[in-house]
Image (tube, rainbow, N blue to C red; front, side, top):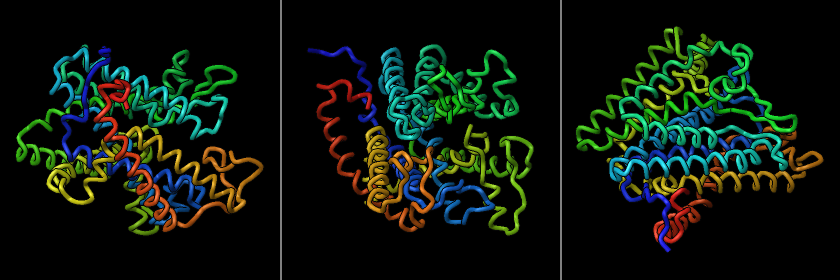
Amino acid sequence: MKSNAPSIPYAEHRLISIDVLRGIVIALMALDHTRDFFSNVHFNPTDLTQTSIGLFLTRWITHFCAPVFIFLAGTSAFLANAQYPDQPQLCTFLFRRGVLIVFLGVTFESLIWSYTPDFSEISGAVLWAIGWSMIMLAGMIRLLPTWAIVLIGVSMIAGHNLFDHLTRDDVGIFGDIWAILHSGETVRITDGLVLHPFYPLIPWIGVMSVGYGFGKLMLLEQSLQEKILLLSGILLTLLFIGLRYSKEYGDPVPWTHQESAILTALSFINCEKYPPSLLYLLMTLGPAIALLPFLARSSTSRLSHPLALFGKTPMVFYVSHLVVIVMGSLANAFIHRQFYENTAAQIPSIGFPYAYGYELPIVYLIWLIVLVSLYPLCRWFYSFKRKRQNRYPVLKYV
């Protein structure tokens, strides 16, 4: 029986540098979550009054994950649109995939981060942002030319910090909507159901929209493309440095002079993620774009293959890595008897026992074990998907 499901084979026309870069940020994401569940440090790692340089940088490097991943999701959509010009089919695919990702966000991701089996708390985290951004991008592709999509995206990224002072109380009856779109305050849907929009949507929709327009550069002749990517990445990074130094605009918390040059430098790069400020996005997307030409030239290296594989199976990696990390932390806590009256005490949003966790070198070792353990699963799934996606159309959305 022939399926009517949209056939948008993202996997058939991939640029290896995009897969490798996506794989890098996915691996870094696993580092961040490993630290969340296994570290013996239970304060904000970017708090300069308490943190160490190693701990700060371990958290800071993972800031690249969400912006780069969502940006590249937009780029992949453009490449699919360029190869398969059936625009309604692409929009349908993006819409359906977005709905699936939002569903995973409000179910699986909410269970992981809030540990409320009755789903009384919805976590509006990264899957929430990716899914809604994909749904909005589908609508924009259907209605607008590429230049207009990029213009809207740039306006969202560059302009949303103008409204940092507005809270839900300032906009009256639209308070809940504003919390979801920008301010990130908790939304009480009913007496027994709340939404925590950790990833407010406006800037993330902007990132995916700009990523969509960026895809046009990935179709240029290679030498010209590499020059433009490198120059664009450097200019964005310099723009970050200039705006950050000026303290005039782009982040709600200006950098400050600290007791040492190192701490001052850390303050300089300590930009706001919730919601992602203009400077946060320039700081992360600029270097990532500049890195793409180098990844393209090293695409045959031994390390590129496993990273590209992770980049080709992002949803499987995301779901499975959280399961492995959470189950591992619970097992570890049980073995060492370091928990309260129930295992919920091991979930970060609930709180860890004071004595729980390990020093940073052990956290890094656990992270490497997680990556190695997930590689066979991702390799199997990628092979299975390539062979069976025509038989099982749902695989196109995973």
